[in-house]
Length: 202
Image (cartoon, rainbow, N blue to C red; front, side, top):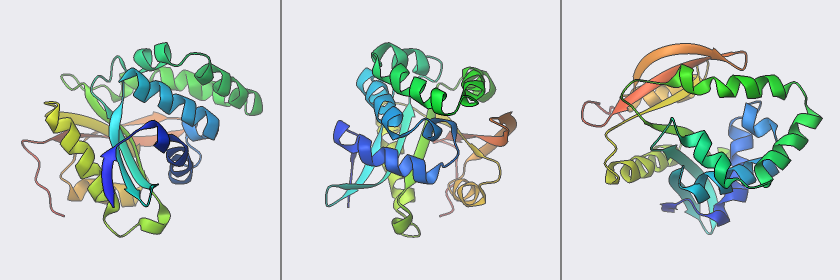
């Protein structure tokens, strides 16, 4: 298995894994075509980078981050041309209640903001067939190596507060729980990772 930088040929498979791993979440609810357009805008603009675990040409896991939480959405939307709003609009037509979630997304940055920290891991997912093989651990390792190569020393991330498996994973990796907040009708946990201070148990 190879761990490589995320590239356009990975977007379709990433959308599948994103939908499987985060079913019911806001972005997956807008559909796979929207996710692919969003990835093209995010990575094409340089607002996001990340690593993919690839075996025989097939993405088995991925993880991506931004180095600038405050500018991420602005940079992504500027690069998105017509595709992101087009596919988002179709998603809202199918499920109008998602418009309320869109308004909540606008407020996400304020809720997840940590003073002095600009980098954030936004999403990671693993093929269910590959779980318990430490592929999730390794793809996060690969992503963190990319972050450290850029000079990033601290980052944040969020997770559903009832996702016990993910929370156990973060505790093993020495992530620091900072706060909780409500978004999309669910309770979220906010974590910080300081590469110089954390103690990994796994």
